[in-house]
Image 1 (cartoon, rainbow over the protein chains, first blue to last red):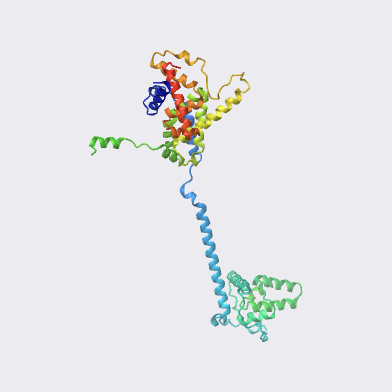
Image 2: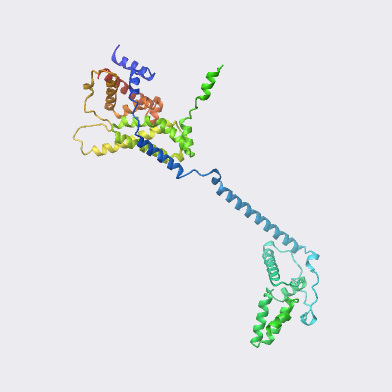
Length: 226
Length: 200
């Protein structure tokens, strides 16, 4: 048998694991890395895990769940707000007589009531259907004013007289509706006017105050002013 | 049918986790999985590097580099191939880098003698090792013959013997065709066989 053929057969035997060469080599397989090297690698492996621990599974969901919660809340609020606006619009177009005619206010003393002239009926008085974009803003503003007024009433401890629709119309026709000052502030302003000698203005302001807050206990304030 | 003693034997034999499972467990924070994997391959990798570079200090440095690379990147581990292929591919690349550094360093000090990077010529030529007497001497002779092989041939021999890789796996690790790997292994085996027999 020539040498190349012999080599080929020996190589095939080696690939099948039947060679003495493999057996001989396995006797050399005693070398191991030193213990210090083992310790260094294993320490690094532990540190890599403990210094940078894996995130707990639920922490992975924190951000997506938070975003989803914010989106759901925002949508709910927008939907609720939109429904409120739509309801307000419907009320404005089809006013409920029970709501528009507020219960009769307790009658104030005659001398405190301003002399009210009957106002001419203007063409703007009938409520006309208007585009939503134009009517939304006043409604929002109005509801804000109502809540402000409620808050002030709670703070001052007395109830503001309900203003009828006619009175509101009168104010709107006569000029732009002003948000009234809180009673204490208003009275302080009247007192200041009096101290400055502007008696006429003070009286006019007081009359307006009485119209606005007919049931406010003025006696107490007058006592304090003296 | 399995009799009682056989069943007991099967139950008492621990089911060995695959390398890939261990690596995935380590990725998920199980350090004991890495310890098992390290114990399984530390000797194999160490000898592969030691036989390849021929110096204990260098082998230890390369060994540490390879394992530390696995540690550093363990969180991104995914099973794309056998773990041994991954491990020895890293080791192969690290060795190639080392050979390049060596070649660069010895460029200036070389005085005309042409040497292949990674080939470590023994002070004693293989011919002087003829006439081996006992098994111990044969083992020593084999290691010395191994050191005289070109790096590429030595590598395929070590991957086959140490890691138990097939020709396909060796080709994947070293980045060559299967036939190239086979050819290199054939040269290595024939050279070693003749050397041990005293034919070289």
